Image (cartoon, rainbow over all chains, first blue to last red; front, side):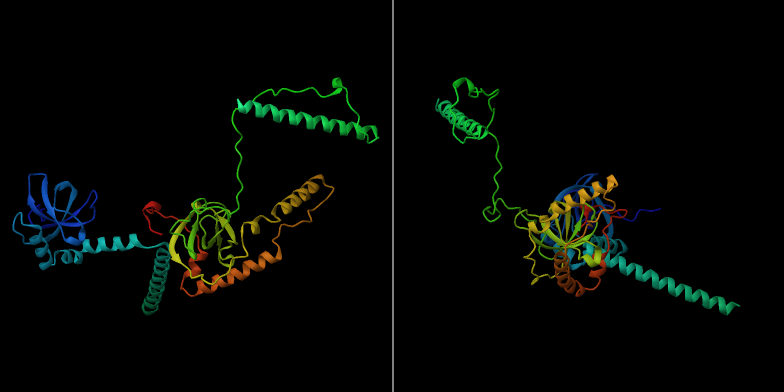
Length: 140
Length: 231
């Protein structure tokens, strides 16, 4: 198995620990074996900092960036290359989005989801039973 | 120093009153109605207190709700507004979802209703620490609940309890037989419950699935941590 995601300049990451957990950032520079400099979009609220690589989850998305470039350049590049949007389109990104939505549901929303799920499984069960009986009658 | 003198003067006053009372008693007993002067030897001896109070007795001040300042009143949590759906956490109605009507002035408790027809919770008082406030709200503006206050819940309750107890004791003897006093709510309370619930129900029917939501009990399932959830 060859590795596909590397710690490299321009790699989009998700912070896994601390104040900015679950936020998206990008690697701007590599300090040593364990530490990198990260930066992010303005709306994420993540400041330009040095962070331990252990606290980063690497994504598939890589942005073309000059090494150790300024915050303004990083933000422009992220915007122009639609980095965050590209991540949201991946299966991982969609899962994260789904989790975010689910976490924000109120008690009443959860109840409505429960009812909808019940209804769906009921429909599926009904349809499946119909198909089964059809195949049985056609076979005999 | 002044404390002692004051104390002694009070004691003297009390003794004088005691002597007067004894005289009066003696007069009644003798049937004459005349006040008989007692000899000094017949008087009640002056008693020294066997102990001195260590601390001034703490007296609870009973202030009416109106007199209480804003600071002394129970502060309602910001998340609880009229019409908020609450989840009850304690007592026999735990897990029930109820509608908050208003905060009661005197006790600071929450006035809630099931509505009764949906989940069996009557008009009831709850402490706000025993509920979870949800973000769901029912529009209950225009519902008049002013006839319900703290006394509405306590009035007559004690008498009824005592009567039931008496009936139970009679039943235990075997002399009284079955208790004749049944535990039941006065008709006017039932009517008020119906009247308020009817208005709440109108608002509830306006939102799809809300009726079913209020009828169901709240539970936690696997992987749900209440401190991490939004309600």
